[in-house]
Amino acid sequence: MPTCIYCKVDKKPDLFNKEHVLHDSFGSFNNTLTLINKVCASCNSLCGDTIDRLLARDTIEGFKRTQYGLKKNEDFKTEGKSSKIKIRVCEGLLKGLAAYLFLDQKQKKILLKPLPQIGLRKGCGTYDFFAFENIPSFELTSYNKYPCSERMILIPPGVDIDDAIEALKSKGYNYSYTGESELDLENILCEVTRVIDIELQRVMAKIAFNFFAYFNDENVILSHNFDKVRNFVLHGQPLIKIKVDNESILDDEKTANSLRLGHIITLEKDHSNSIIIQISLFNTFRYTVELSGNNNSNYAVNVGFGRFFDVHNMTINEIRKTPLLIPSINLRIPKVKILM
Ligand SMILES: [Zn+2]
Image (cartoon, rainbow, N blue to C red):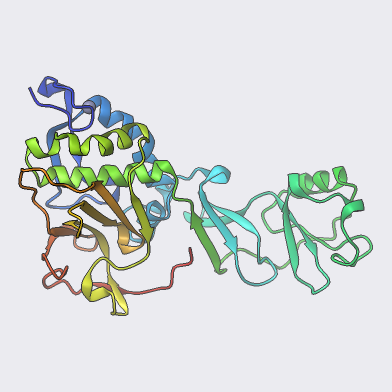
């Protein structure tokens, strides 16, 4: 009977699901990498309903699926106001306004919608934005900071005006609505951040271990060296080492002004013999996952290579050992500065 690589329980083959190394919400590749009789149905659904869903719906990488055509706008789903993707306008009069992404069903466009907030105008002419519950009471706002006697208030476009007036009244503001502003939230520069929480680390650890499992023998995969990563994927503890930055994985992209369009996963051993997987979805952030520390076991581990998931041609290509390069792939996008 096959053994599940996550719960390590022996089960009949019909209790196993086909597991994509990288969830197919990130692309249905022609030569996809799948694990057969390696991940049991209960581990599969435990991850599918939680961390796989989170990766697709509530991460910057998940959102990029619509930008790169892997998902249609009209199928866009979001956690809305409770999304862990934090968006803040960083230019113009709305600078500092917090917003989230939503699907405009009519236009089939993904647009920005502000969280319920109001702006208080400062002496310098710009605004401070406050969530309804954090609006400072009228008596406590300093005249030096907000110098208009009735305070100058901006209700951002898209915020419910009646709700805003209600919130202002409850804080002692005698506000009368004077009409809509000319401001809008289309084509405005924003800073986008996403906390790297345990759930996001778990799903990256799962992609890493799936990838490792695809290229290694069962006696290696099931060894005690990887019990920590198994438990981390399933239960979020004990913690494993995961580093996140926006460095390039591929050697020739470290100095180039462009990046290849696709996902990258590499498998290496570092100088202290730890097994290291690097993952970058849409070649955006680099997650460096330590699968097992100081691996001095007597079995042979297959390391020193990678795969490039080309989201334009929907193929998976080999990455050469050292230096890490993809032979003959020229599809690239310009490198942009990523605010973190
Ligand atoms: Zn299992």
